[in-house]
Length: 301
Image (tube, rainbow, N blue to C red):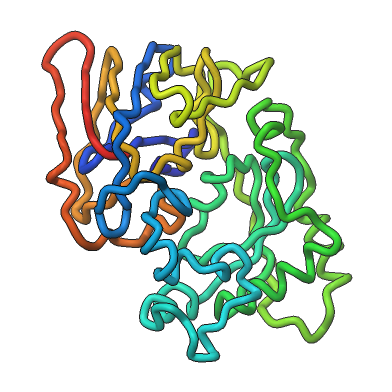
């Protein structure tokens, strides 16, 4: 789902070339169903199984954006000349990265390309975030993150994040504590920036978490109670929409407010939001909407 910072985080669900504004649907019934068809978000080919949140097996095995160093940046090997796609690595990994503290389910350390702030934090459902170190590339960010992960968590507990019980923390005090313990030979510029805070469109948090899975339960119905991180909170359960990149869905709701299509066509739920698709055009997938009453759309997520 695409996010936009504001007094309250705004969400839009990309379906093919359309973007469905989700905030206006809060408190209303929605229905969506997986048609059983999956298409690679990079090459557009049909695939029986989605790998790495939306790729076919071949793309997962060959693309730099699916390499292990994306999950573990300290393993970046672009400087060794062995990157799967050197040009992609130059434009995505050999650029400024920021190490940050965030509070989604408690404090954690993370990294992101500097231009991806604050998108990265909203994707994680962070209620607070604080940039603390800026470095020259992905490898350096990984080295700093590994050092900090010895004293701080580097994972988000999605269950706690969706329960809405996250307490506000003093991130600046934790930053100062972290700086005091950082080794002098670690790379990067230490920052003294202001904290970012986020409010999410949630009417009610679930008292019991039921995780919905489109592979096991293709049809999902329920009242939309909230959106946080990449999760829809429904009266019937919660679902991580990022997990289903490339899935073809039928979407239906009482009111379907459609945002203008972006100039660059991009399928949803990709690990790298600024990565452009290649290969077959997604315009060839079915796309329709009924006039009046409940809006209905079939398209690629």
